[in-house]
Image (cartoon, rainbow over all chains, first blue to last red; front, side, top):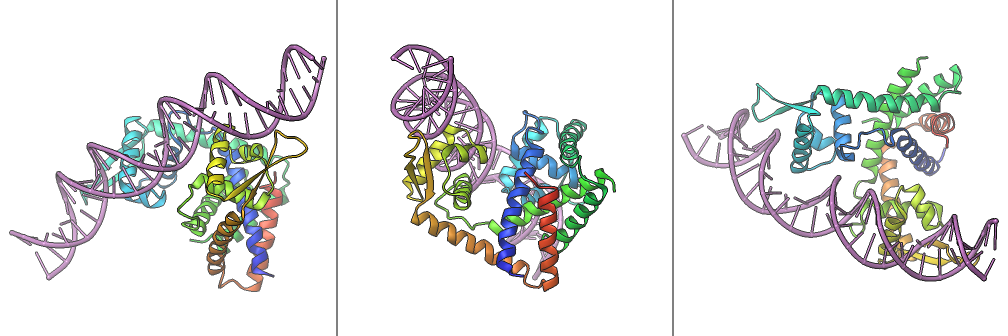
Length: 143
Length: 143
DNA sequence: CCCTTTACTTATCATTTGACAAGTAAATTG
DNA sequence: CAATTTACTTGTCAAATGATAAGTAAAGGG
């Protein structure tokens, strides 16, 4: 098996993944927040509690810009900042109840589109997909 | 197999794909062009010749914004616009020789990082990955 | 206890991106 | 051939994003 050929398949594959991700998530976010703000909320939703530094690292945002966006999300009552009692420089960021509701709705939209996409898949197809995802996650998209 | 469980695996998986894509492509583009401009060039590179309308559709850009970015890329001598002889409203967009060189370099950077990532994969691993990609492409990320 | 580092904030400015209104020119259609 | 549609352009404006300088407050280390 040629590694160059695998690379070319990967390029095509990631293009497909990005396209499908776009289709599943298109307009799933509320109009009241920007794309970057949505990305931050999604990250918080799956990893909470997180610190501003972690958001900065994982979302590839500078600390000043992270701080600004978190302030906006806080003003919109979508997140809560809790001061760390151990290290008072640190903050703990969580979704507020409004934030939880917003993200729950977004995920529900995305999931329903996903279910539509695989509606015709057989039991065997689903198992194949699951195995394929695990293979790639382990052998190619590992950390 | 539970479809909800598969959905959760997919969410994690696409996050991984996006992360690895970021790592492979980070700083691969020249500083002289913006991210959107790079995306357009990448699309042209793999699909040329293309029309401005196709770029607009596939890159999710309005026609006015597509037109502006193509003008900038043209001014930077990275693409060439050729008027269609059949339908004189249409244009055919291709990479210029400078554009070809720029994209060739970018792809070379990305490919070398990819090779580094799979350097320890066995022949069997590579075959597993290829099969997994084909499975997902066919059953999940189809058009 | 000073000095340095870490975590985060504030302020500011430039660039990029997105959106809309209006326009041109060629093709198509009735 | 007039009216409509298609393909693309130009101009303009606002919002989002990115980058940098400077500052605060707490923690850590000699």
